[in-house]
Image 1: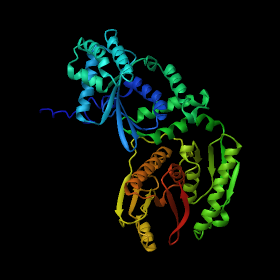
Image 2 (image 1 turned 90 degrees about the horizontal axis):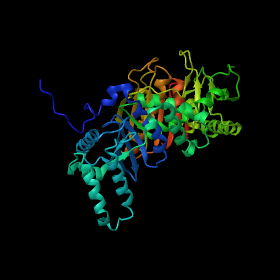
Image 3 (image 1 turned 60 degrees about the vertical axis):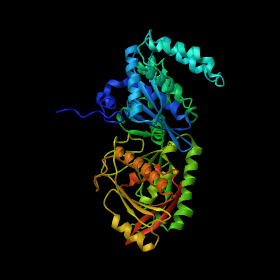
Image 4 (image 1 turned 30 degrees about the horizontal axis):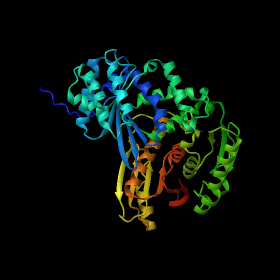
Amino acid sequence: MAKAPLNPGSLVTPSAMGGIVGGKGFDFQTRYTVCHLPVWLTQGGFQQIFSEGTGDIDVRYVADGKSTRQHIQTKDHDVTPSEFKEVVDTFMTSDAGMPGVYERFTLACPSLSQQLRPVETGLARLRNASPFYDDAPSALAPTKEDVDARMRSHALNDAQIQFIHDKVFIEVGHGDLAHDERALDIFIARLLKHPEFADKIRAMVQPAYAEMIRYVSASKGNVLDRSSIEGFLRAAVLSSLSSEARVTLWLQNWTKEAFDPPADYELDWTAHFDRQSRRVPTADVWNSDLIPQINALKSKILAAGAVRSIRLRGKCALSTGVALGAAFPNVGGWTFEIPQPPAKEPWRSDATPTPNYRLEEEIIEGQPTGADLVLGLNIRGDGREDVLRYVQSTGQIPQAYVFLSPSSQGALSIGGAEDAIAMASAIRERLGVLLKARQVRTTRLFFYGPFALSVFVGQQLTSIGEVQLFEYQDPSYVPSALLRT
């Protein structure tokens, strides 16, 4: 059978999937990515990386609403003239397959072979001098002729040479990335230049390297957003501190109990809850009393020191979980340890997310003039009919009803903390996209799932406008806390 022709713009060609198929053979590429993440994060327009997209590494920037992308090909050895020519041909093929998508292509390697070094130094000299002669470009004509002649001596044709001038950049000096210990030093030095981590000592930062190596390796073929990368970095950098020092919070809702370990802080809200009648606080109590108590607690913990890891104990309403997580967000470096029966070990909010996690989604259109979205999170079961019935009874029809769930619903639909973290992150990303696309800034959130996940979801609810929570109080729902993110 004849083979189908290759589409140069496709992400499933052998050249585009080489790193995914090759697996562990691409340590140099992973080290390069991890060591450059601190640099990219300091660049204001940086948004995403895509490992093994069109090749090795793709980087996306967004400025003034416009996206630009750069493609990076890594080599763990000195590049020879014939290999350099192959790389340029690959770049040109990618550019032709996705015209106008990539503004620059970079070859990153320890060095070029001795024969090619005059090409690299000539290109660097020409480009470095260009800003000085921007009003007299003819002054550089002799230099360009010499550089072109050097490239022609290695069998590069005019089209390849012009493409190199327009879009190809060469990064050398990456020999240290062949060794973990040297790469670790580079990673630490660069991360400590990031404003948020500038005051972190090596002992705190070092664990982040190994975690990021695993994270990037497990994410090949998937897009990593800036928020995901920063959140993972915060958790990794603070992990050593969290393991040595944490506070214990008892939060009492349905019952007042004693737990192990003893409480460093306690919030007793049992006067506002009654399990037998499923009575929950009114919206006014939530917003004027309980939410301020959470905010005051956060101020106390911050005033007491640098600890941002919380052991949470208590039998609580789901709205409590979401509100608590929102007050101690993932982007602030906060982590939670929460028992979630029947799991033997507590769920932790700094668990490594399950790779390639997918949400099931159903959207039911409401009124085009609706001022908000209704978001139903169906994890333990399908609460769709109850949500629809309640919302319609209020007469406040949203622009759309959005129902998100794991691939299967029920008590065991979330396999553990890893699934929960992945789902919480996916919910935040999807909600952000929908709010932006529909030009609304308010969400009515109905949660039907495990308590620990409600906290993790709350930790992700940042910069998405107002979120009105609801609690089930037989025979229907009642509004609870209003979160302003």
